[in-house]
Length: 257
Image 1 (cartoon, rainbow, N blue to C red):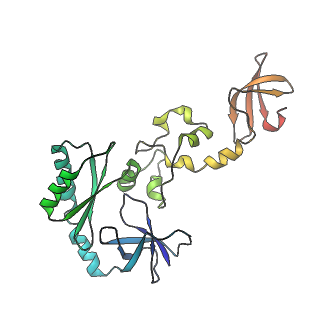
Image 2: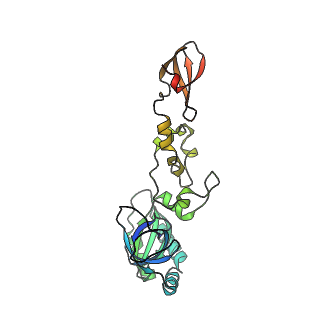
Image 3: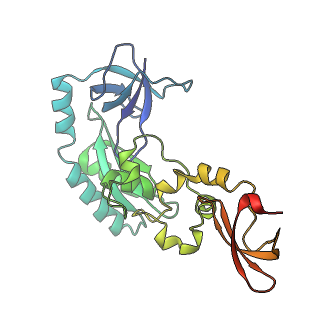
C-alpha cells in the first residue's frame, strides 16, 4: 500500500510504499536518503499513479522512538552552534532546524539563503564538534513558515501547515485574475514573504467567471452607446462602464453588444 508520510516539518510529505497495513498517526521507520528515520503516517491507502519515494521498513517500536529522542536531544545545541559558526565564517545563511537519523550516523541541517552558499567549512566544523556526518539541506521561506507554524491575517492556521500536501506554485497571475494584484505585494503576501497560498484556492473559478468578460479599460458597445470598461465584478457578472458622454453604467455581461 502507499502512504503519505510526514518526516521533516520543513518539507512536503513523502509518498512511501509499505508491505503492511498502516493507519493514520502510526509512527514508522522509513528508508531515508541519509539513513533510517522516523516519520508519521498522514494518509494511508493513497490512490495515485506516482511512484513512492521511499519504503517503509517497519512500524516504529518503543526502542526506535527512544533512540530517535536520544539522537535529537542535542538538536537545539546543534542549531545554535551552526548559527554561530556560520556567522563566524561570514556565510549569508539562516539555520532553521537540525535532525539526526535513527541510527545516529547522519545529521541533517536545514537552512535558507538568498544566494548560493559554500558551506563546506561549516560542515567540517559541525562534523568535527558532534562527531557525525553532516548533510546541509537548503529550504525555501515557505518551508520555513511550515516548520515554525503560526496564524495568517485571516486568523486561521497557516495554509502550509494546515494542508499537508505539496505546496502549490503561487503566481501573480492568480492575484491578477482575482483583481487584487493592485493592492500591492505586501498585502497579498504571507508571513513567509511570498504570495499567500490561499490565492490558489479560487483562481480557477475566477478564470471561469471572467471567461467572455472584457479587459479593463477596453471599449465595449451597449445599447446606450460605446463605453470604456472601468470595473469588472466577476462574482456578479457585472461591468461598470463610462460612456462617451461621461455617464456611468453598470450592466450584465449578457447585455454587451
